Length: 415
Ligand SMILES: [Fe+2]
Ligand SMILES: [Fe+2]
Ligand SMILES: [Fe+2]
Picture (cartoon, rainbow, N blue to C red):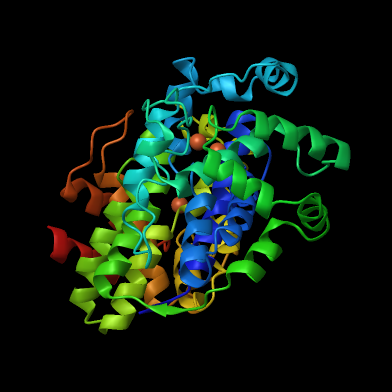
């Protein structure tokens, strides 16, 4: 299947950046900021083409596991240090550098996650070591000689975005930043990365960033279009995305991946051709990606949601549309994914489509979502048996919410 992976990763990072911003108070668009500065240093290192674009993508997703580990790392009292204003002041004003945080969990999990993405160039351990200090005082106690310089430039770019506000950076502040970073050479940052910073990042780059935004500049620097991926690679990409969405909340640890696996069975049952099958699988894996931007206290509320909360949670379907519709060639995938809460009687959301507007694929996605939700375990409920799930779904079909024939087919396939 042809896929514009860069587009896809851009879309994901947009959603992830929103989550991270809300959870940590780090600047919005953190991932893109880090990718932009990493790319500038990458260019200074002589990277171009796919190598540059892969590095920028990895930098953009360096905190991809944050949704899963932020709360843990926060409550452990570790990662929070990075974002504490007091520490910021230490780094800006103090003579000594401060040793940053733990951060080992989201680095290790982020590395594990990203290994599923079929990059064409070597980006191994870039995320794993993105919090390592050159002198071995980072979470894994690796010195610069033991990490790789791609991870070192991500670490430098990451630190800049955490400490300085590049949205409003003035020339004076840039000079202070320059001095501070040079003074940390060989301590917090590797000498090589500091040299690349000096060579690759000028004050004008921040001005251009303030004028055009990181995304446009990044796309200009790293533009890679569609590429062909094997079914196996698409499966891996789907698992990566589903995993990130599923990890957002402990309530739905297996939801997207479970829905995708069941989609696989059903597309075989209906005899979809290979291309459509893999696209439908991907769509199922992504159907709840809009949930990334819904706050966890609503996602995980026990008991009944009030009207506002319910209205809020419902926006995830439209958010899925927003996120996926930006990806080149994703029209059908976007449609199936974002219609998964539509109902035949027109009472669904986000668009309130009616039966004659809902295709077999739309209806199938809606049924799979419900079947998966009913039969998966959640902290507040044991999984419901297949038989009971089908009973509930038959009742919904009687209310003209979902397609009766598809319910019968699901019963055949999974009974
Ligand atoms: Fe991080
Ligand atoms: Fe970060
Ligand atoms: Fe949903």
